[in-house]
Image 1: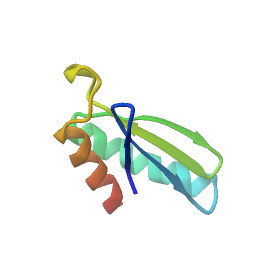
Image 2: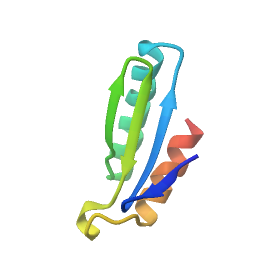
Image 3: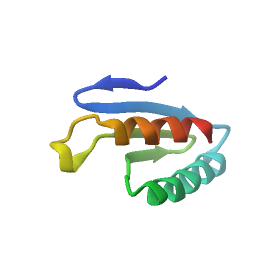
Length: 75
């Protein structure tokens, strides 16, 4: 479940291994590029931490973040 904290939507995704985590990140990258809205994220082995915030709206959570979060969940 996404959590809204410090003007960001955050979620950690956990996978079987690094390869699955990286494949997920690749799919998210294409999705983010399509939407013109890019996440702050990090990856360590099988975990991907994602933070969504809208920088050009003063680093707050907007409809753009919620739309991207919803689309990421569908992956």
